[in-house]
Amino acid sequence: MKISIKLSVLLMSLAVLSCKQLGDDLLTVDSPSASSEAVIFSNPDLAKGAVDGIKIPMAETNSYRGRWIPFYGMNTDSEWLNSSESTSNDNADLVVYDPKPNNSQMNTANNVWAQIYNGIERANLCIRGLRTYGNPTPGSELGYLLGEALTLRAVYYSDLVKGWGDVPARFEPINTETVYVPKSSRDVIYKQILADLEEAETLVPWPNGNAATSSVERINKAFVKGLRARVALAASGYSQYPDGIRRSNDPELAPSKLYPLALQLCRDVINSGTARLETSFEGLWRKYNQEVLAAGNESLWEIPFAPGRGRVLFTFAINHTNNNQYQQMGNNRGGQGGPLPNVFYDFDQADQRRNITCIPYKWGSAVAGKAKQELGAFNRWYFGKYRFEWMNRIVTSTNDDGVNKIYMRYAEILLMAAETANELEGPAAAAPYLKQIRNRAFAAADRPEKVENYVNALTSKTAMFNAIVEEQKYEFTGEMERKLALIRWNLLGTKMADAKERMTELKNRTGRYANVPSTLYYKYAADNETLIIYGLNRGEFDNPGAGWTSVDWTSLSDSKIAALYRNNPDTKQFWPIWQVFLDSSNGTLSNDYGY
Image (tube, rainbow, N blue to C red):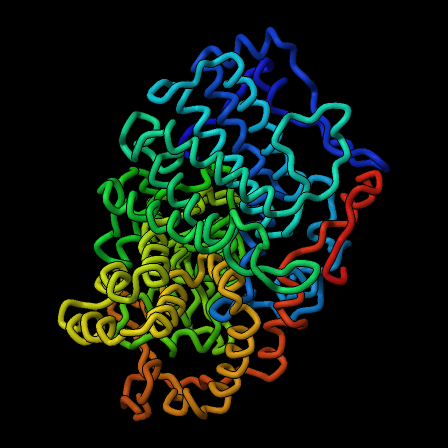
């Protein structure tokens, strides 16, 4: 995190929760005096420290940093934990749709569930204090801080509902009468955060509208509107309830109400001109790894990690065997997850996103401090969006790289606009948004066929919707956005089953993958570091001749394919509430869905 979150002892009295997790204890908070609140929330500098403190729980060891980001969203029809087949620990259980309430990675009192509620309590205190003592009007510093606090609370709640479905709703600071509360319907939470984000829209400026919004580490109106659109689509979409998979029964959350809202919000962002697609897909991810934080580009908001916190590259970068010229974090850094082996072959060969998203090599053992790329295994690909080799600094911490997590980018705005425009106005209205995404994906010479002809042929709502579903995969694989989208479309189980079928065909080189080569050939570029590979593309069956080394490219077992999921994903869309929190809930919490 390139901003500094520091709170004085006075501020900490507002922002720090005391977690009592022995026996029957639950989250409680040390209540500051009214005079302390009046001092803090009437002063913009002090109030900013308190609102910055809302984000602190995201960086705690077992919170977003080391649990939510590494595990939630993994194992979809396009990405998986590379060790999904492993039974040596409980990690795989979290992603193969087989988690238990006593999961050793999650069943601790300081885990992500507690940290999210920690952040929510901090937000509740700030929201109450700003409303009571701050006169938070649009255009004022305190008004901006209220909008930021409301939005951060909405971030936490939207993730809670993604991960657990129905959860306790806490929109006021905890008191002695509300220490133990049961789960609320997710509908209640969705309606509250939609209203909160509507208010936040009036309080925060567009990107670069003030000093705060010049950085993607602070909340801006484009992100607020985008998050509200995302929440609207999730709230009106499908998800698992105790009585089955369905949409909400609440008429206020019907697609007829929320799709027009989402479309208008997306068009507001698009028409504002305050955000944009990066001109190239590779350029987007180079800037990300270089930690470019200027607002007004593609990234709308990022979870801000300090240099000594955050494990995005540590977890998901192209794997590095040991310390080398690009990273000094230690052995086996990066590579925890990757795209499914078939995804590379599902891309159009001309799609420039393919070679950024799907990487078949790792960085081998360093010799005299320098490593070079080495072909990995056919069943173990890596995400190329995250690269130590694209950073402007060498990470020396053994556990944390300090690189932010992009929470939303402008491409999602365009795809949500396409989806809702298609539903409400038809495929012709959706086409311009889809074309923008594909224009960046293909070189100018390919656009007449791959963009214009392709999109113009999508003349029915069904065809356009199916194309958007596929486009979301090609655009966002490796960003852990796919799972929520598949759930709300009611496609999770269907697409996951199709992914197993695809990998089986790929393993056998039949059906959709009959023309995928089984042998790769490689040599090194003049830098003696960069691989040149022949045989990755469909139809490249011939031997390129002298100077090339051949390797087998078939290692994909039935057991590895089966490990994508153990249970029907549609029956385990959510994680269970962990046992430590059930035990400390005074009997108010319980699990559904067979947990």
